[in-house]
Amino acid sequence: MTGKLDLNLLTIFLEVYRLRSITLAAESLNFTQPGISGALKRLQQQLGCELFVREGRGISPTYAATELANQLRPAYTQVNNALANLTAFDVMQSRTFNVYICETMMLLLQPLVETDEEMGNCRIQFTITPSDEEKMLNAMSLQKADLVIDIGTLNSPSYKVEPLAREELLIICSENHPRIQGSITAEQYFQEKHITLRLRRAQQTTIDYFTDMHMPDRQISSVCDSAMTIMGLVANSDSVGISSTSLTCNHARAFGLQVFDIPFETNPVTYNIMWHKRNQSNPAHRWLRSKLQQLVHKTPIGILPV
Image (cartoon, rainbow, N blue to C red; front, side):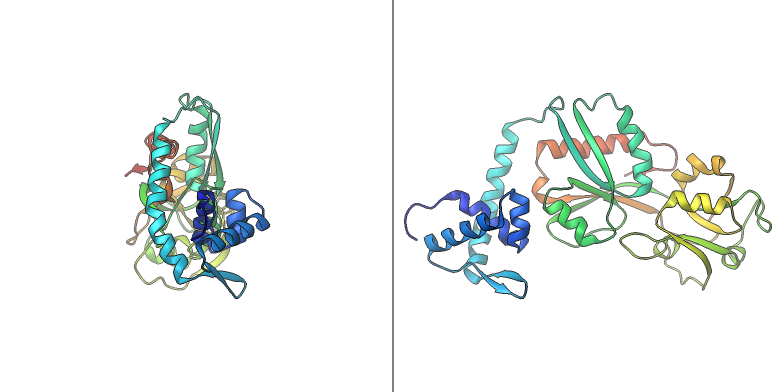
């Protein structure tokens, strides 16, 4: 190594190593791409070794880069956590938290955030979770989303996943349904036309995702991306649908719907909270997670905090 090492270059190196992309690292650090490339070149010159090589349209770390990153990351994380813990989070300081969230939980939590008198000068901005999991992970990695609330889990070791709430599913149909009145059997359910919800990340319908049994072929009349749309369509048709307990309790009467327990075994819906592990000890992020857990305890019947 030649000369005195600029520690700022190590921050850039670790971000490029983490994202495997100069473009994404520039976006994450609010730098220009030439600035990132120049910093890597200076670091390589100071260390006297190559750190990244071109591979297709992207870059791959060399053995030297992998060894360097493995030794630097634990210390870098400790330094960042120590600095973050020096300053306690102040709810009166203006800040907007960005949360990616599934539709059902947005409908429950948004009104509670609006009326929460303990938010101080902080805001929580909800955005529907992208259907593309890679986009969702990139948003958390680039700190465009502070966390995600959704069904399903993540297999990446870089992210933490914890259950936030749980609820059951129900069958819904119109109060004026010509064949279903007062009760429904499994045979009746499968004989009817169905309006289904395609789960955004799983690319499956709700009932297929939340049961372990083999589902018979059904006549699908509509496939939706919105749980509220399903309620509206079911109310004005002879089709049946599946809805969560919380949405049904809140909106079935307004839509003029009959509600039934599902006459076969299904699994409960578990809503998970997911975040990048680098934020695990961050005071502001801890406050956000705690606030969301508090709000879940205030949600209407149907949601069971976990």
